[in-house]
Amino acid sequence: MTTFSRIFSGIALTVLSVACSKGSDDFIKENIDFAKAQINLAVQSIDNDAEQILTPITINKDNTVKFASYRDWRGGFFPGTLWLLYELTGDSSYIPLAEKYTESIRGVQEVTDNHDVGFICMCSFGNGLRLNSENYEDVIIRTADALATRFNPTVGLTQSWGESEKLDRKFPVIIDNMMNLELFFKASELSGDPKYYEMAVSHANRTLKEHFRPDGSCYHVVDYDPETGEVRKKVTAQGYSDESIWTRGHAWAVYGYAMAYRFTGDRRYIEQSLKTFDVLRNHPSMPEDCIPFWDMCCPDIPNTPRDASSAAILASALYEISTMDVDNPSQYKQYADKIMTSLSSPAYRAQIGENGNFILMHSVGSLPGGAEVDKPLNYADYYFLEALVRKAKIEGSL
Image (tube, rainbow, N blue to C red; front, side, top):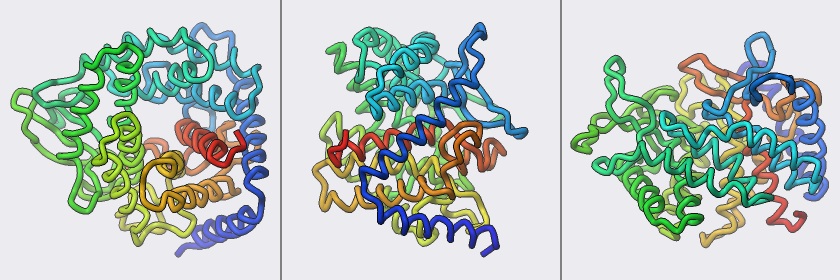
């Protein structure tokens, strides 16, 4: 183990011990106060006079903040973060701010070349609808219509990326796409039209059949023949290898199937969610502080980056799972609590005014692609706050 690794683990475990002695209400309040301070600074730093409102997504190599428009798959996370901050604080001054950034990405309802419109729309408009406004129903339904253009009934799935002769792919579907099904489920609920629900279930079922290995781990990408529906190959794009355990993909699977179970009650979905979580929880490379490496099969462990974003996604999913009809539900809350305690420590949570005004440090976008390695990511912050909301509701402090 390198000196950095020993120091990193030591800080995390020390803070775990200290944090566990705090009351839960104090833990939640302290995190809310930190998030308010950091996000307020982020908002103040954005050029509000710009013609197009952009949202912060990460930091560049020179530590300046990198921004994106609504067409980027991460475009909805910052508006969603503002809605979650309103939910956590009850401070109505966050409503117009959340509305402003949410309205700035309304163009998502016209986007048909991006399968991640579910992420973009549900984190922003979805939270806005849930917390404040009925004016967002139409945009959710129209965005679902945009996503539906990517559904192929022969394959039974919505297509993720485009066809590429150079990369030898025809109809690639990534495990991340499970998260976009919430848009279909919600649109069906709002409109009363079963077609959205049917597409979501079809996608979940085919993914269940093709993406998972017998031990519960999953492939990142499955490529299909769009004319026959047959599987062409199973590979990775962001993991260490085709057969490795790319951690964020597994976190998406845990969260995505728990969400699908919430909407359908199909036991196969929650069983897969738990089976995939067990792959991560029981993996010999899982660190004591429960913040996983970017890929659990990377041969450079422990001298390879952790991924706070995967941990935050898992924590949020596990809090929801702990409220579901599962055996020993408290074990999932306890694991989520352990993750959140680690993420709230100085090893992962930034100092106020630093880290580009993002909350969490040490996330990984795509290590094979050399993109956003050991950087803050806006979706790590989003799922951290969503996990805090769920924790607070379970414990009766919200």
